[in-house]
Image 1: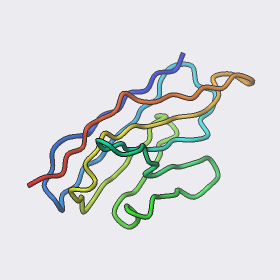
Image 2: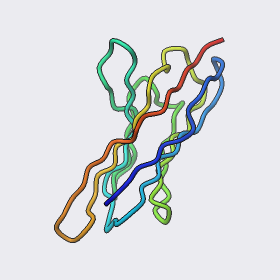
Image 3: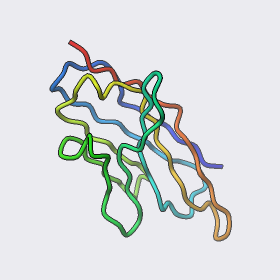
Length: 120
């Protein structure tokens, strides 16, 4: 089995920074997608940033230049560095990880979500 653990959310003032982590553990053969989504009250879940094996990261237009996604393959962990945070970034942030736990068996998991609140 594969488990995800998210951490790093919290309350920050506008213009501040936070770093989110999403660690995958368990029986993992490979990971080909690690992404961060967010969902604000009354809004649809949206992709914020994603990193796929062999490709450049991609970002939502609203976070380009402010957020950076990275991945530590040795730790099966993705990070989302969020700078210059704005009140409209307030949401529950969820990571999504997709990969293989054996040669022929895939998995796709969501983290439990972590609250990010940007407010003065």
